Image (cartoon, rainbow, N blue to C red):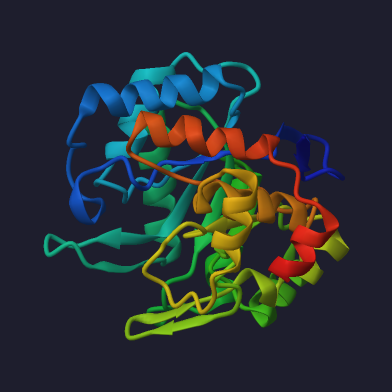
Length: 289
């Protein structure tokens, strides 16, 4: 199973429909070095050796931890490997997440990602919205398109966007991908004290209409308010884990979904990758609807 990013551009990127998100590799609260550095490096190598060629990262994971791990484990990179990073946020010493989204901030983040990933151009960058911080959305996205025209970015995507923001972005230029919260138990926008985590269901039909891959994040978070046991029912029938069925459900839900389940354990990585082999029946999907 593959999916093509920016299919109508001069530089489309075709990747496997099961990627890997690196957010769980750093220490507690996505901060500091991994508890087991050797295992973290092996997870990255095993993922790529197993056919994963889409990695999701950010320079504010760690800080800079996941980017440095990717470069250490995989550079020089395989020709078909797509590394997607995010800008628009940074971390404070208290481990809080804050906007870093002025045009100068975004440029500094891109330069830092280029340095830590050891790249001359980043193939895909998501503008992550975590509260506008006084900077209009159009100004942020305009700065991203400026960096794209300079050749520092190949493709521009959006992360944690509302339907209205995606519609506005599409009027400004080509949006290659969208990364929103999405999983079987958390499909709509989740309002938290620090702001909204926009759900995939809010934008999935637009992504399908425009041929834009939707990349679900937090798809396996168990602490979110999942109100039913449907995943557990299907997991028992398939002798699979609930995480595997959640991934399989995403893969069956729409051909425009590109799941990126993350883990800090090699055994769980291998388990997650096997989810691509699970075939859900029409009855399964009806039960999970």
